[in-house]
Length: 137
Image (cartoon, rainbow, N blue to C red; front, side, top):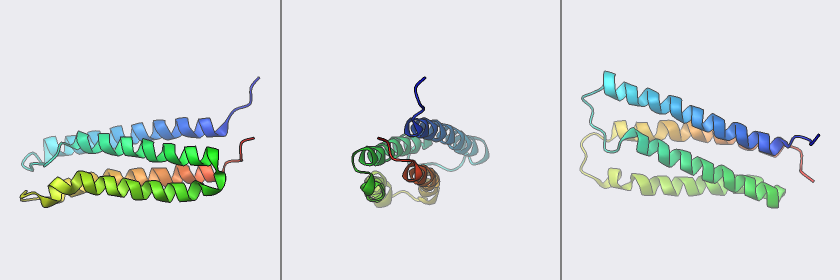
């Protein structure tokens, strides 16, 4: 019988949690704007925000895992660097909205940053669990 690897279990739980959270939040926001707020016109569709944020979250957590595997002492630095990278990509993605002549930018900004910070909390929780895991031999 092979021993369980806690890192693999953590990665599986992270991916499943991220997908479930994205599905629930994305569907909730989509239903909100379809049925309760149909008059609000969005600059980008909601699904674009979620696709970008899920991909960024997987990349940043993958980077943290890679650094944890290579040099465990630098896992925290990798987490901080990945969040800074995520913020720059976020600014690049939102730049057309910020510079555009769109009348009401508030719904789009809220639609982006609600999942951004929710996914960030999820990344923080799982990164803390990763840091608390026992070193692999």
